[in-house]
Image (tube, rainbow, N blue to C red):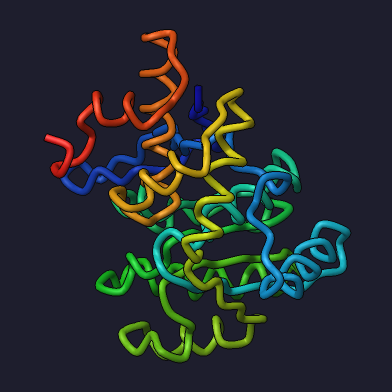
Length: 252
């Protein structure tokens, strides 16, 4: 069964505007224990990127900006790199952090071994976050600390971003992660199932992919559900079991 661990980072300052009091709140980030570099779906078009990642882990790589559609594997790669670097790498998913004051979240970035900021497109309508990211970029660059960002578009196309920040992101080595093909999604699904001790036949994979959402996160969540269902029933994952579970509207 897939597990999600929660890491508590250095406490951040939360500003109470009404009372002008600074409290200390623990900032908890969720890590998916299944996401690491060993099970990242390597593809021929990503060999140069993965070579760059290897160089970064060896201390000789460059800072990166990764872009691509939802489900292309950006979060997987960032979490895998963070785990490979070690506990002093700072993984910051904007999906979980946008609610916090940006200055507080980014205050201690220069003490990290690397900073990895996921889903920066979520800051497009947040000038406060963009300004804070601009200043943290400069601090990290001055300190020689690697930084990796992910988004849905390359910096040059993010016209809603403050020009100074867009310019800084444009200085990075930019890589495109294209969406996985149906064949690649099928291979990924079977590989991740095997890691859990499950076997998915080609027929089952085709049945799933013809009905399920195509994003990797959605497929991994589905695999969680199938794992639980197979365990509870003591049965392998087969097309009759999938039909019995009535997971999709067409099965009802």
